[in-house]
Image 1 (cartoon, rainbow, N blue to C red):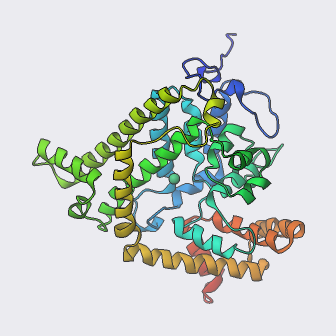
Image 2 (cartoon, rainbow, N blue to C red):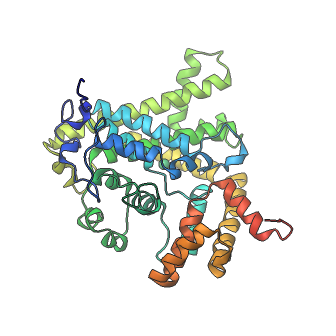
Image 3 (cartoon, rainbow, N blue to C red):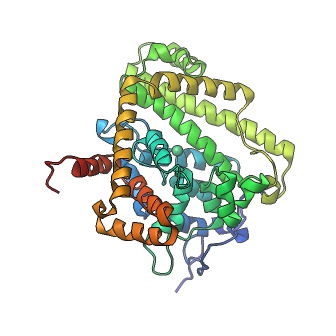
Length: 394
Ligand code: MG
């Protein structure tokens, strides 16, 4: 029988000397034999794709509530777009494409229902119990909450994937995380694969929020022409195709905006790498600032776009109404479960009781936050109905 060879990204072949290579991986929390047919980072990616938390991203949103329409981005499609941009960038820079894809697919796992509004309210509910932060929750899911494997809790992912998922962290939390938290205390950086995924995230959400905002009728083209990044591409598209339909024009403008940002990022990052001259991954992680980034001009144009979205989309009254409702639902559920854990479904009661007996009230609150954070938008709305609508039968 012919022997099976493991794929090329298990070796340094084709990778820049400062890329992350699994040969130098700091390994998994619970040692496992190497996979037969995949690289270590492929195995991480596959475990993420097969997790329950990943499937739930389909029904979680960032700006629009999931039931508002089938055409909007969800956290799942957002994560796939981030993975696509990350992989393109990783390939040009000769970084580990699989690792950047893995980090991208996992980066939003810990998000609550109802986007950032949901996280802010849950953080408020948890203020006496250590707070709630979606980024730490992503780590909690992959390290502890997924219960799928016989030999360990969580997904037992490699150090480099876990490091990439943990984008930011307070010193208090970093101290609790041991080896993984150490870089925040030492002010060191993660590998370049994680750094590019952060930028890919930003490129993806700014541009798809423009697209979704236009589709929802909350933004209009004239207003967006105040933003330089949009206006430049708008002019280019309409001078090349004066009779183009609005629908095609929007897509043309947005794809060109993404392309312009990615190209700027690649040119600027390539120059920064050449100037810093790193010869190993350690040379990257030892720096006090991320090595990657946009040009100064693109940074300013991005700020302009973000500010426009903040004023015109995220604070739009229709989005704000959703945010206000999210607050009622999440706070209502948290308080009801905290005051009477018997309202929880049996599996959650068990989880909360175990944490309560270990850590008292903080444990009880954490278990409830785990349950609420894991809900999809529509599940949270249904659960609120079941608890608070006295005429609901179950
Ligand atoms: Mg994201």
